[in-house]
Image 1 (tube, one colour):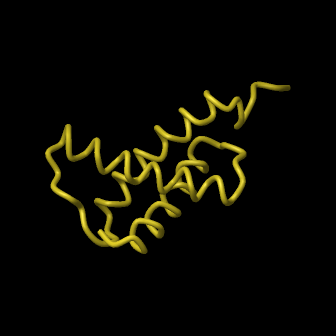
Image 2: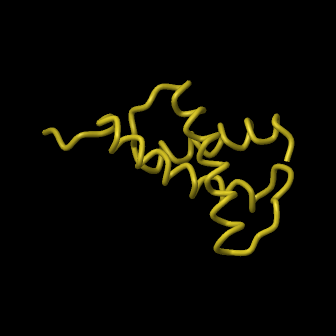
Length: 88
């Protein structure tokens, strides 16, 4: 998949993941975590689901990227101590 496609899909995945997790990351961090999540999701899908290099912007790549972005956002929030806290 081309770099522009990765950026677009990663940005979409990052916004969906932060919406699902109700995370309070900034826009730039959301995009970066989404792009990293798209790469992680693609790697995991290739490893465990035997999906071969999803290409283009379609439902399959977005779902795989969102799952990867959720994993990356949760990991980043745990490591950095950011995101939503259990305050009253």
